[in-house]
Length: 477
Image (tube, rainbow, N blue to C red; front, side, top):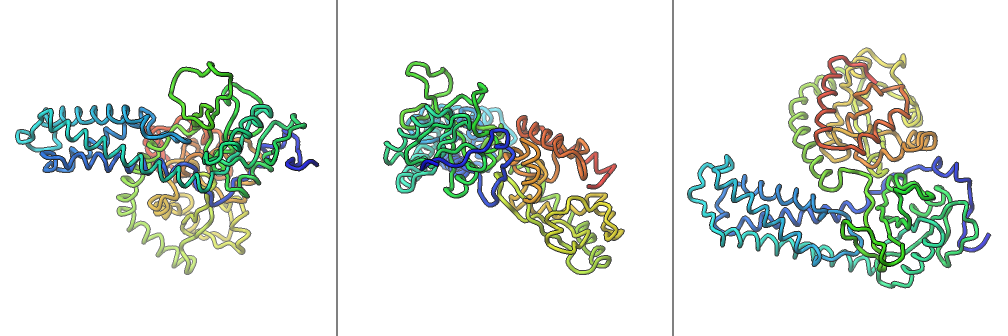
Protein backbone atom coordinates (compact mmCIF):
# COMPACT_ATOMS: atom_id res chain seq x y z
CA UNK A 1 0.00 0.00 0.00
CA UNK A 2 1.43 3.40 -0.91
CA UNK A 3 2.03 6.01 1.70
CA UNK A 4 -0.97 8.29 2.04
CA UNK A 5 -3.44 5.69 0.76
CA UNK A 6 -5.72 3.83 3.10
CA UNK A 7 -7.66 0.60 2.67
CA UNK A 8 -10.47 0.47 0.17
CA UNK A 9 -13.95 -1.00 0.74
CA UNK A 10 -16.80 -1.34 -1.71
CA UNK A 11 -18.90 1.76 -2.35
CA UNK A 12 -22.09 -0.14 -1.50
CA UNK A 13 -20.94 -0.63 2.08
CA UNK A 14 -19.59 2.86 2.64
CA UNK A 15 -22.74 4.62 3.90
CA UNK A 16 -23.70 1.68 6.13
CA UNK A 17 -20.66 2.01 8.38
CA UNK A 18 -21.48 5.48 9.68
CA UNK A 19 -21.80 5.99 13.41
CA UNK A 20 -21.97 9.62 14.63
CA UNK A 21 -19.43 10.22 17.40
CA UNK A 22 -20.77 11.50 20.71
CA UNK A 23 -19.63 14.78 22.18
CA UNK A 24 -18.96 16.82 18.99
CA UNK A 25 -20.75 20.18 18.95
CA UNK A 26 -22.19 21.44 15.71
CA UNK A 27 -19.71 23.34 13.54
CA UNK A 28 -20.15 27.06 12.95
CA UNK A 29 -22.89 27.64 15.52
CA UNK A 30 -20.78 29.67 17.96
CA UNK A 31 -19.66 32.29 15.45
CA UNK A 32 -23.18 32.81 14.09
CA UNK A 33 -24.43 33.20 17.67
CA UNK A 34 -21.80 35.92 18.19
CA UNK A 35 -23.09 37.79 15.12
CA UNK A 36 -26.65 37.58 16.44
CA UNK A 37 -25.52 38.92 19.82
CA UNK A 38 -23.57 41.76 18.16
CA UNK A 39 -26.58 42.90 16.12
CA UNK A 40 -28.87 42.70 19.16
CA UNK A 41 -26.44 44.83 21.20
CA UNK A 42 -26.04 47.30 18.30
CA UNK A 43 -29.81 47.79 18.06
CA UNK A 44 -30.11 48.38 21.80
CA UNK A 45 -27.18 50.81 21.67
CA UNK A 46 -28.92 52.78 18.93
CA UNK A 47 -31.97 53.09 21.17
CA UNK A 48 -29.83 54.88 23.78
CA UNK A 49 -29.65 57.94 21.49
CA UNK A 50 -31.96 60.72 22.79
CA UNK A 51 -34.90 61.02 22.64
CA UNK A 52 -35.39 57.24 22.27
CA UNK A 53 -33.52 56.44 25.49
CA UNK A 54 -36.64 57.35 27.46
CA UNK A 55 -38.94 54.89 25.68
CA UNK A 56 -40.18 51.66 27.29
CA UNK A 57 -38.66 48.29 26.20
CA UNK A 58 -41.31 47.65 23.53
CA UNK A 59 -39.88 49.85 20.75
CA UNK A 60 -36.37 48.48 21.39
CA UNK A 61 -37.69 44.94 21.05
CA UNK A 62 -39.46 45.85 17.81
CA UNK A 63 -36.29 47.42 16.39
CA UNK A 64 -34.08 44.45 17.30
CA UNK A 65 -36.58 41.90 15.96
CA UNK A 66 -36.89 43.81 12.66
CA UNK A 67 -33.12 44.08 12.29
CA UNK A 68 -32.56 40.38 12.94
CA UNK A 69 -35.31 39.38 10.50
CA UNK A 70 -34.02 41.66 7.71
CA UNK A 71 -30.39 40.63 8.25
CA UNK A 72 -31.37 36.96 8.20
CA UNK A 73 -33.32 37.46 4.97
CA UNK A 74 -30.20 39.01 3.43
CA UNK A 75 -28.04 36.07 4.48
CA UNK A 76 -25.94 38.10 6.92
CA UNK A 77 -25.92 35.20 9.40
CA UNK A 78 -24.88 32.53 6.94
CA UNK A 79 -21.61 30.74 7.71
CA UNK A 80 -18.52 32.36 6.18
CA UNK A 81 -15.14 30.91 5.36
CA UNK A 82 -12.80 33.93 5.15
CA UNK A 83 -15.07 36.91 4.42
CA UNK A 84 -14.60 40.38 5.92
CA UNK A 85 -17.02 42.95 7.25
CA UNK A 86 -16.49 45.65 4.61
CA UNK A 87 -18.52 43.79 2.01
CA UNK A 88 -21.49 43.64 4.40
CA UNK A 89 -21.50 47.35 5.35
CA UNK A 90 -24.00 48.47 2.65
CA UNK A 91 -26.41 45.64 3.52
CA UNK A 92 -26.12 46.37 7.25
CA UNK A 93 -26.76 50.08 6.71
CA UNK A 94 -29.77 49.58 4.43
CA UNK A 95 -31.41 47.13 6.83
CA UNK A 96 -30.68 49.28 9.86
CA UNK A 97 -32.26 52.24 8.06
CA UNK A 98 -35.28 50.14 7.12
CA UNK A 99 -35.69 49.02 10.73
CA UNK A 100 -35.61 52.59 12.00
CA UNK A 101 -38.19 53.60 9.41
CA UNK A 102 -40.44 50.78 10.61
CA UNK A 103 -39.99 51.97 14.21
CA UNK A 104 -40.79 55.56 13.21
CA UNK A 105 -43.95 54.44 11.39
CA UNK A 106 -45.13 52.45 14.42
CA UNK A 107 -44.49 55.35 16.78
CA UNK A 108 -46.19 57.78 14.43
CA UNK A 109 -49.32 55.63 14.35
CA UNK A 110 -49.56 55.58 18.14
CA UNK A 111 -48.58 51.88 18.51
CA UNK A 112 -49.60 50.02 21.63
CA UNK A 113 -45.90 49.68 22.39
CA UNK A 114 -46.03 53.15 23.96
CA UNK A 115 -48.93 54.88 25.60
CA UNK A 116 -48.18 58.30 24.20
CA UNK A 117 -46.18 59.26 21.16
CA UNK A 118 -46.80 63.01 21.21
CA UNK A 119 -43.64 63.54 23.25
CA UNK A 120 -41.48 61.33 21.01
CA UNK A 121 -39.76 63.45 18.36
CA UNK A 122 -39.71 61.76 14.96
CA UNK A 123 -37.33 64.25 13.36
CA UNK A 124 -35.02 62.98 10.64
CA UNK A 125 -31.83 63.92 12.58
CA UNK A 126 -32.87 61.76 15.54
CA UNK A 127 -33.62 58.77 13.31
CA UNK A 128 -30.37 59.28 11.40
CA UNK A 129 -28.37 59.41 14.63
CA UNK A 130 -29.90 56.20 15.95
CA UNK A 131 -29.38 54.44 12.62
CA UNK A 132 -25.75 55.62 12.43
CA UNK A 133 -24.94 54.47 15.96
CA UNK A 134 -26.50 51.08 15.30
CA UNK A 135 -24.68 50.58 11.99
CA UNK A 136 -21.30 51.62 13.41
CA UNK A 137 -21.72 49.39 16.47
CA UNK A 138 -22.76 46.43 14.33
CA UNK A 139 -19.84 46.88 11.93
CA UNK A 140 -17.34 47.32 14.78
CA UNK A 141 -18.60 44.25 16.63
CA UNK A 142 -18.58 42.09 13.50
CA UNK A 143 -15.10 43.31 12.55
CA UNK A 144 -13.78 42.41 16.00
CA UNK A 145 -15.37 38.95 15.85
CA UNK A 146 -13.97 38.28 12.36
CA UNK A 147 -10.49 39.54 13.34
CA UNK A 148 -10.38 37.25 16.36
CA UNK A 149 -11.58 34.35 14.24
CA UNK A 150 -8.95 34.93 11.53
CA UNK A 151 -6.21 35.35 14.12
CA UNK A 152 -7.15 32.06 15.76
CA UNK A 153 -7.34 30.32 12.38
CA UNK A 154 -3.89 31.60 11.37
CA UNK A 155 -2.36 30.24 14.59
CA UNK A 156 -4.29 26.97 14.49
CA UNK A 157 -5.63 26.24 10.97
CA UNK A 158 -8.92 24.36 10.87
CA UNK A 159 -8.57 20.73 9.72
CA UNK A 160 -10.64 20.06 6.61
CA UNK A 161 -11.51 17.28 4.17
CA UNK A 162 -11.63 17.89 0.41
CA UNK A 163 -14.38 15.84 -1.26
CA UNK A 164 -14.85 15.20 -4.96
CA UNK A 165 -13.40 13.71 -8.15
CA UNK A 166 -9.68 13.04 -7.79
CA UNK A 167 -8.40 15.58 -10.32
CA UNK A 168 -10.16 18.63 -8.84
CA UNK A 169 -9.87 17.47 -5.21
CA UNK A 170 -6.09 17.05 -5.50
CA UNK A 171 -5.78 20.43 -7.26
CA UNK A 172 -7.73 22.21 -4.51
CA UNK A 173 -5.73 20.41 -1.80
CA UNK A 174 -2.44 21.52 -3.36
CA UNK A 175 -3.66 25.13 -3.53
CA UNK A 176 -4.67 25.09 0.14
CA UNK A 177 -1.32 23.59 1.18
CA UNK A 178 0.54 26.33 -0.71
CA UNK A 179 -1.54 29.09 0.91
CA UNK A 180 0.18 29.31 4.27
CA UNK A 181 -1.83 31.20 6.86
CA UNK A 182 -5.11 30.74 5.01
CA UNK A 183 -6.77 29.21 8.06
CA UNK A 184 -7.54 25.81 6.46
CA UNK A 185 -5.34 22.69 6.71
CA UNK A 186 -6.35 19.74 4.48
CA UNK A 187 -6.03 16.43 6.34
CA UNK A 188 -7.64 14.13 3.77
CA UNK A 189 -8.92 13.84 0.22
CA UNK A 190 -12.20 11.91 -0.19
CA UNK A 191 -12.55 10.43 -3.69
CA UNK A 192 -14.90 7.85 -5.24
CA UNK A 193 -13.73 4.26 -4.58
CA UNK A 194 -13.56 3.67 -8.33
CA UNK A 195 -10.61 6.08 -8.64
CA UNK A 196 -7.80 3.84 -7.40
CA UNK A 197 -4.61 5.40 -8.79
CA UNK A 198 -4.68 8.66 -6.84
CA UNK A 199 -1.81 10.39 -5.07
CA UNK A 200 -2.34 13.53 -2.99
CA UNK A 201 1.15 14.06 -1.64
CA UNK A 202 1.33 14.19 2.16
CA UNK A 203 -2.48 14.15 2.47
CA UNK A 204 -4.09 10.68 2.75
CA UNK A 205 -6.69 9.54 0.23
CA UNK A 206 -9.95 8.29 1.77
CA UNK A 207 -12.43 6.07 -0.08
CA UNK A 208 -14.88 4.76 2.54
CA UNK A 209 -17.09 6.31 5.20
CA UNK A 210 -15.17 4.31 7.82
CA UNK A 211 -11.96 6.08 6.75
CA UNK A 212 -13.78 9.43 6.66
CA UNK A 213 -15.25 8.97 10.13
CA UNK A 214 -11.85 7.99 11.51
CA UNK A 215 -10.24 11.06 9.93
CA UNK A 216 -12.96 13.37 11.28
CA UNK A 217 -12.64 12.07 14.84
CA UNK A 218 -8.83 11.76 14.99
CA UNK A 219 -8.08 15.12 13.35
CA UNK A 220 -11.01 17.12 14.76
CA UNK A 221 -12.27 17.97 11.26
CA UNK A 222 -14.87 20.75 11.27
CA UNK A 223 -15.04 21.66 7.54
CA UNK A 224 -15.70 19.59 4.39
CA UNK A 225 -15.00 21.20 1.01
CA UNK A 226 -16.95 19.79 -1.97
CA UNK A 227 -15.28 20.32 -5.35
CA UNK A 228 -18.31 19.26 -7.39
CA UNK A 229 -21.93 20.40 -7.57
CA UNK A 230 -23.71 18.24 -4.99
CA UNK A 231 -27.15 18.88 -6.42
CA UNK A 232 -26.26 17.68 -9.95
CA UNK A 233 -25.96 14.05 -8.94
CA UNK A 234 -22.20 13.81 -9.55
CA UNK A 235 -20.29 10.83 -8.08
CA UNK A 236 -20.82 11.05 -4.33
CA UNK A 237 -17.82 9.68 -2.40
CA UNK A 238 -19.21 10.97 0.93
CA UNK A 239 -22.94 11.71 1.53
CA UNK A 240 -23.26 15.37 2.64
CA UNK A 241 -25.99 14.60 5.17
CA UNK A 242 -23.77 12.09 6.97
CA UNK A 243 -20.82 14.48 7.07
CA UNK A 244 -23.11 17.16 8.48
CA UNK A 245 -24.33 14.73 11.13
CA UNK A 246 -20.68 14.21 12.09
CA UNK A 247 -20.63 17.88 13.09
CA UNK A 248 -18.89 19.24 9.97
CA UNK A 249 -19.68 22.48 8.15
CA UNK A 250 -20.15 21.84 4.43
CA UNK A 251 -18.80 24.15 1.71
CA UNK A 252 -19.20 24.18 -2.08
CA UNK A 253 -16.09 25.25 -4.05
CA UNK A 254 -16.53 26.34 -7.66
CA UNK A 255 -13.56 24.82 -9.52
CA UNK A 256 -14.80 25.53 -13.04
CA UNK A 257 -12.83 27.53 -15.56
CA UNK A 258 -12.79 31.35 -15.18
CA UNK A 259 -15.88 33.15 -16.41
CA UNK A 260 -18.33 30.37 -15.53
CA UNK A 261 -19.43 31.60 -12.11
CA UNK A 262 -23.19 31.43 -11.93
CA UNK A 263 -25.11 34.62 -11.06
CA UNK A 264 -26.78 34.86 -7.69
CA UNK A 265 -25.58 35.26 -4.14
CA UNK A 266 -22.10 36.80 -3.80
CA UNK A 267 -19.76 33.95 -2.86
CA UNK A 268 -16.99 33.92 -0.30
CA UNK A 269 -13.53 32.85 -1.43
CA UNK A 270 -11.01 30.24 -0.35
CA UNK A 271 -7.62 30.28 -2.08
CA UNK A 272 -9.42 32.30 -4.81
CA UNK A 273 -12.00 29.54 -5.35
CA UNK A 274 -15.60 30.85 -5.05
CA UNK A 275 -17.01 29.29 -1.87
CA UNK A 276 -20.60 29.02 -0.64
CA UNK A 277 -21.99 27.21 2.40
CA UNK A 278 -24.03 24.06 1.86
CA UNK A 279 -26.82 23.96 4.41
CA UNK A 280 -29.34 21.13 4.44
CA UNK A 281 -31.16 22.45 7.53
CA UNK A 282 -33.66 25.14 6.46
CA UNK A 283 -33.81 26.41 10.04
CA UNK A 284 -30.40 28.08 9.86
CA UNK A 285 -28.91 30.02 12.74
CA UNK A 286 -31.76 32.52 13.07
CA UNK A 287 -34.37 29.77 12.77
CA UNK A 288 -32.71 27.75 15.52
CA UNK A 289 -32.50 30.91 17.64
CA UNK A 290 -36.24 31.54 17.20
CA UNK A 291 -36.95 27.86 17.82
CA UNK A 292 -35.03 28.13 21.09
CA UNK A 293 -37.03 31.20 22.12
CA UNK A 294 -40.27 29.33 21.40
CA UNK A 295 -39.04 26.39 23.47
CA UNK A 296 -38.29 28.60 26.48
CA UNK A 297 -41.50 30.62 26.11
CA UNK A 298 -43.61 27.44 26.23
CA UNK A 299 -41.52 25.16 28.45
CA UNK A 300 -40.89 27.41 31.45
CA UNK A 301 -44.62 28.04 32.09
CA UNK A 302 -45.40 24.38 31.29
CA UNK A 303 -42.88 23.18 33.86
CA UNK A 304 -44.36 25.49 36.49
CA UNK A 305 -47.89 24.30 35.72
CA UNK A 306 -46.79 20.65 35.64
CA UNK A 307 -44.88 20.86 38.95
CA UNK A 308 -47.79 19.38 41.01
CA UNK A 309 -48.18 16.54 38.48
CA UNK A 310 -44.44 15.84 38.65
CA UNK A 311 -44.60 15.73 42.44
CA UNK A 312 -47.55 13.33 42.45
CA UNK A 313 -45.84 11.05 39.91
CA UNK A 314 -42.66 11.01 41.97
CA UNK A 315 -44.55 10.15 45.16
CA UNK A 316 -46.54 7.37 43.45
CA UNK A 317 -43.40 5.82 41.96
CA UNK A 318 -41.55 6.14 45.26
CA UNK A 319 -44.32 4.31 47.04
CA UNK A 320 -44.79 1.71 44.29
CA UNK A 321 -41.22 0.96 43.15
CA UNK A 322 -38.98 2.27 45.90
CA UNK A 323 -36.31 5.01 45.86
CA UNK A 324 -34.77 6.38 42.69
CA UNK A 325 -37.75 7.81 40.81
CA UNK A 326 -35.66 9.46 38.07
CA UNK A 327 -33.99 7.48 35.29
CA UNK A 328 -30.92 8.96 33.56
CA UNK A 329 -29.79 7.64 30.19
CA UNK A 330 -27.30 8.74 27.53
CA UNK A 331 -28.90 9.77 24.24
CA UNK A 332 -27.59 11.25 20.99
CA UNK A 333 -28.67 14.76 20.05
CA UNK A 334 -27.83 17.54 17.59
CA UNK A 335 -24.70 16.83 15.55
CA UNK A 336 -24.14 13.48 17.28
CA UNK A 337 -23.53 15.14 20.66
CA UNK A 338 -24.36 12.98 23.67
CA UNK A 339 -26.47 14.25 26.57
CA UNK A 340 -28.20 12.80 29.64
CA UNK A 341 -31.94 12.35 29.18
CA UNK A 342 -34.27 12.38 32.20
CA UNK A 343 -37.37 10.21 32.60
CA UNK A 344 -39.43 8.83 35.44
CA UNK A 345 -38.19 5.33 36.21
CA UNK A 346 -40.98 2.94 35.19
CA UNK A 347 -38.75 -0.15 35.28
CA UNK A 348 -35.48 -0.88 37.05
CA UNK A 349 -33.20 -2.72 34.55
CA UNK A 350 -31.10 -5.61 35.87
CA UNK A 351 -27.88 -4.22 34.37
CA UNK A 352 -26.53 -1.08 32.75
CA UNK A 353 -26.08 -3.09 29.54
CA UNK A 354 -29.78 -3.94 29.50
CA UNK A 355 -30.71 -0.28 29.89
CA UNK A 356 -28.44 0.70 26.99
CA UNK A 357 -29.30 -2.11 24.54
CA UNK A 358 -32.81 -3.40 25.24
CA UNK A 359 -35.22 -2.02 22.65
CA UNK A 360 -38.74 -2.15 24.10
CA UNK A 361 -39.95 -2.69 27.68
CA UNK A 362 -43.64 -1.86 27.19
CA UNK A 363 -44.79 -5.42 27.98
CA UNK A 364 -42.19 -6.28 30.61
CA UNK A 365 -43.81 -8.16 33.50
CA UNK A 366 -41.45 -6.50 35.98
CA UNK A 367 -43.19 -3.15 35.40
CA UNK A 368 -45.60 -2.09 38.14
CA UNK A 369 -49.14 -0.87 37.51
CA UNK A 370 -47.98 2.68 38.17
CA UNK A 371 -45.18 2.26 35.61
CA UNK A 372 -47.58 0.86 33.01
CA UNK A 373 -49.96 3.80 33.54
CA UNK A 374 -47.21 6.40 33.27
CA UNK A 375 -45.79 4.89 30.08
CA UNK A 376 -49.25 4.58 28.53
CA UNK A 377 -50.05 8.23 29.27
CA UNK A 378 -46.49 9.47 28.51
CA UNK A 379 -46.26 11.00 32.00
CA UNK A 380 -42.84 9.36 32.32
CA UNK A 381 -41.57 11.84 29.68
CA UNK A 382 -42.40 14.96 31.73
CA UNK A 383 -38.91 15.35 33.31
CA UNK A 384 -37.60 15.97 29.79
CA UNK A 385 -39.04 19.48 30.09
CA UNK A 386 -35.88 20.14 32.10
CA UNK A 387 -33.78 18.83 29.18
CA UNK A 388 -35.57 21.36 26.95
CA UNK A 389 -34.79 24.22 29.34
CA UNK A 390 -31.15 23.12 29.54
CA UNK A 391 -30.93 23.18 25.74
CA UNK A 392 -30.28 19.45 25.33
CA UNK A 393 -33.58 19.07 23.46
CA UNK A 394 -36.32 21.05 21.78
CA UNK A 395 -40.06 20.66 22.17
CA UNK A 396 -40.32 19.42 18.58
CA UNK A 397 -37.76 17.36 16.71
CA UNK A 398 -36.64 13.80 16.02
CA UNK A 399 -36.83 11.63 19.14
CA UNK A 400 -33.36 10.99 20.64
CA UNK A 401 -32.02 7.45 20.71
CA UNK A 402 -29.33 5.59 22.65
CA UNK A 403 -25.84 5.46 21.07
CA UNK A 404 -26.03 1.67 20.65
CA UNK A 405 -29.19 1.89 18.55
CA UNK A 406 -27.95 4.96 16.65
CA UNK A 407 -25.10 2.80 15.41
CA UNK A 408 -27.41 -0.12 14.60
CA UNK A 409 -30.00 1.99 12.77
CA UNK A 410 -27.40 4.07 10.90
CA UNK A 411 -25.92 0.89 9.43
CA UNK A 412 -29.31 -0.57 8.53
CA UNK A 413 -31.15 2.54 7.28
CA UNK A 414 -29.37 5.09 5.03
CA UNK A 415 -30.46 8.55 6.07
CA UNK A 416 -31.06 7.70 9.73
CA UNK A 417 -27.97 9.63 10.85
CA UNK A 418 -29.19 12.70 8.94
CA UNK A 419 -31.84 13.12 11.68
CA UNK A 420 -29.11 14.71 13.81
CA UNK A 421 -29.14 17.87 11.67
CA UNK A 422 -31.84 19.29 13.96
CA UNK A 423 -32.16 19.37 17.78
CA UNK A 424 -33.95 16.29 19.09
CA UNK A 425 -37.38 16.81 20.62
CA UNK A 426 -40.03 15.71 23.07
CA UNK A 427 -42.34 15.02 20.13
CA UNK A 428 -42.05 15.09 16.38
CA UNK A 429 -43.75 14.53 13.07
CA UNK A 430 -43.11 10.78 13.27
CA UNK A 431 -44.71 10.56 16.71
CA UNK A 432 -47.92 12.35 15.73
CA UNK A 433 -48.15 9.88 12.82
CA UNK A 434 -48.28 7.06 15.37
CA UNK A 435 -44.66 5.94 14.90
CA UNK A 436 -43.84 5.24 18.54
CA UNK A 437 -42.61 2.17 20.33
CA UNK A 438 -42.05 -0.92 18.19
CA UNK A 439 -42.71 0.65 14.77
CA UNK A 440 -40.74 0.99 11.53
CA UNK A 441 -37.40 2.76 11.98
CA UNK A 442 -37.24 3.42 8.24
CA UNK A 443 -40.59 5.23 8.39
CA UNK A 444 -39.51 7.24 11.42
CA UNK A 445 -36.31 8.37 9.70
CA UNK A 446 -38.25 9.36 6.58
CA UNK A 447 -40.76 11.46 8.55
CA UNK A 448 -37.99 13.04 10.67
CA UNK A 449 -35.97 14.04 7.61
CA UNK A 450 -39.09 15.43 5.92
CA UNK A 451 -39.70 17.54 9.03
CA UNK A 452 -36.13 18.86 8.96
CA UNK A 453 -36.13 19.63 5.23
CA UNK A 454 -39.46 21.53 5.50
CA UNK A 455 -38.99 23.07 8.94
CA UNK A 456 -40.86 26.17 10.06
CA UNK A 457 -42.05 27.59 13.38
CA UNK A 458 -45.62 27.14 12.21
CA UNK A 459 -44.96 23.45 11.60
CA UNK A 460 -43.61 23.18 15.17
CA UNK A 461 -46.81 24.73 16.53
CA UNK A 462 -48.96 22.39 14.42
CA UNK A 463 -47.07 19.35 15.70
CA UNK A 464 -47.49 20.53 19.30
CA UNK A 465 -51.26 20.90 18.76
CA UNK A 466 -51.46 17.44 17.19
CA UNK A 467 -49.45 16.03 20.10
CA UNK A 468 -51.92 17.51 22.57
CA UNK A 469 -54.71 15.82 20.59
CA UNK A 470 -52.86 12.50 20.68
CA UNK A 471 -52.52 12.71 24.46
CA UNK A 472 -56.31 12.57 24.74
CA UNK A 473 -56.16 9.06 23.26
CA UNK A 474 -52.77 7.83 24.54
CA UNK A 475 -51.11 4.71 23.17
CA UNK A 476 -47.85 4.82 25.06
CA UNK A 477 -44.40 3.87 23.78
